[in-house]
Image (cartoon, rainbow over all chains, first blue to last red; front, side, top):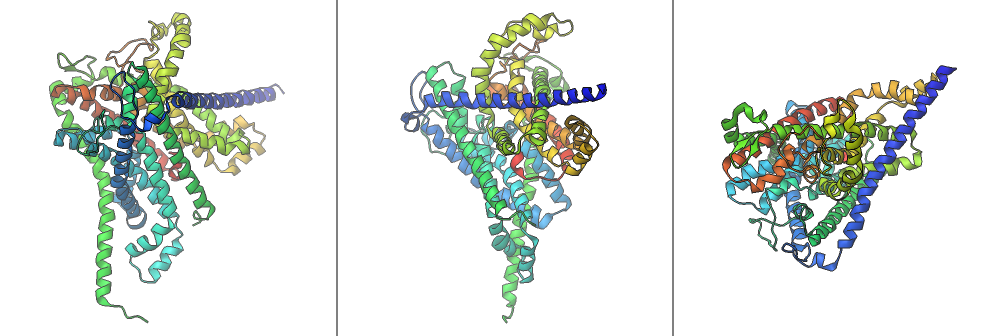
Length: 284
Length: 319
């Protein structure tokens, strides 16, 4: 009887601890979002989107940083995702379980969690040192390297979900694999691949460390890809650590913009995936 | 019936070859990126490694003025902050995963699960700025004075909580890291728990086991490999995390016995000093730090992936 009571107590104790852990975790995370929203809203204003980043102590906006982030993220995706999609296609359709595919899959998963600052150093070594100066191109390249693993993995997973009968039918009509892939598999896996792209954009648009020594920063408006370019994460980093109240406010506003953008991207990716599954795309 | 035109067929074959080699090239490029990272870091850190040799990793000194560099303080900071983070995030993540798979009312299961996953997507700079402006002042005013008053008199650990409450430092960085990797660890563990066949759990309950007993004797043993893999993946993140730490670590290149003192980590040293580094040896030493971080995280992540590989490959969302 005593033993039973003890077991019940133990059960209750651990389950309570688990509940406390969940509550504590959710509270911390809610606290972060709350600070972000309350500080960020205070910094929201129209000049945020119409003016350049200010000199020390001055007032201004984030226009050049927003533009720079958009350009480098877009370029990063344009450069990185085709490689990711093609490599994912190789793994799913051509390589399958060849030794090359197994090692590519493994290395890709390692790259997926590798520290982004290392990628920044890599691009610094092979691009910035060669060119002799920091540039938006270098920033975009480091983001592209970060986008490849994400798109590769989703593409492979999504191609594997396409019913095998569709592939067989195409092959039975005498189509070569490339035709089957381009005309049958890609359209069938389209929303899955788009999900991967959205996730990749979400991943790279908040990256700070790799941009620190590739794109650097620029206080002024610049559209020159061959020169340092302002970008939101690095501006947030510099402004948040500064002693100026105006700069810190801009940093919070920028932080809110980034987070909201990323949350919207992640949620859209999830909705797309849910739609895909509702359509029965996951049935093999 | 159309007659197959041999020229058409030949063309198709050429397209096939082109497309196939394009995908193959892309796949090989992925391998080359990793190789390129290793080679370029080795190349960049060569001057420092040649000057200091193996003593680079055993010396604490970091003096740009006299051009003396050693990585020990940064390695120490990286390891200690990550250990603090794991000590907090692993039990808490385990608790959250347990709550989500076993206790949570079905109605809340999806919203909470999605919330946890979305928080794993929040960029690390956000955690850093929050740590600096919100968490550090709270720790400085309330938690650290208490630790200094009480924990500092416990024999054995009195050294850990000595000195003034700066707010920022090793301990704070460990906390911020913990909060950052928590959603990630919780989401991975939940996915691992979900792979346990319901039949096994029901057998446990059928024998009269309590919920905790089913978890501890059925769920955990069945998903042991996955749990360890998920924890190590989280550790890999914590070790390499840059922005969340850089804000709150204090950037002091020394090893203090106190956890309240400012310190540095490999990644935050690179982030703080790289663009300001003058002189080849300084830059090269920072790249050598990067090489070290690459070696450490590669080992941890590769081991984690090797473990998780034994489990079924899942969709990307949770990572």
